[in-house]
Image (cartoon, rainbow, N blue to C red; front, side, top):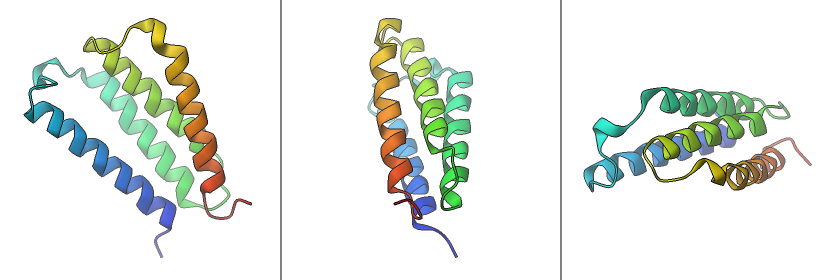
Length: 109
């Protein structure tokens, strides 16, 4: 049986890939400028988050979200969308999302 949180993570992952492809197709993000290492970090974070959401009550959602945010921040700095000084704001947003997801997961009350 597939959990709802696992489906949610899959939905977010598909949405993120779709947004990335749309940005490339609209010319907002040249495909040649995409740095591969930060995107691999994002994929690792998605895997960590999906793994943590798969089992109710399992810890690791916040860590996965932080890894995703770190990879996205690295990517944004690499392509010139953000500056390194924006890191604290991105970190706080990621922590907040991680806490919200952790408490929204099934088996948490």
